[in-house]
Length: 112
View 1: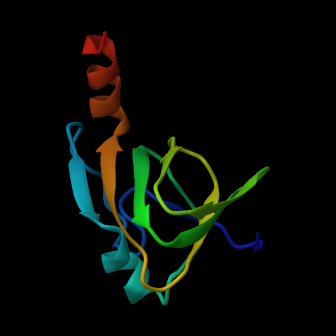
View 2 (view 1 turned 120 degrees about the vertical axis):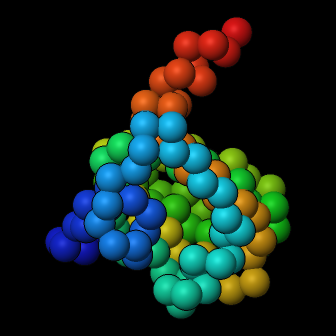
């Protein structure tokens, strides 16, 4: 991983801003990835959980201590304050739900 680490309180590439406590966002994986040439540089999100739901395609997901090479249907959950970098192979498909930490905690309290 590169030495420069960006800390996002919002979504990757968006202007720095704090989200409401009950923030939930979902977008196709290819939407933001394609804008960044399929390369998501090393960064963290201070208050966001991200759930990468790959339906088809390939990705290399790297954290500070692990690297996962994925292909096909894959689910990867990135908790807040986790350094991560992703290299997607063009043409992948999937969705990326993002949930604020405060709302995640509420969801987990009510889950059986």
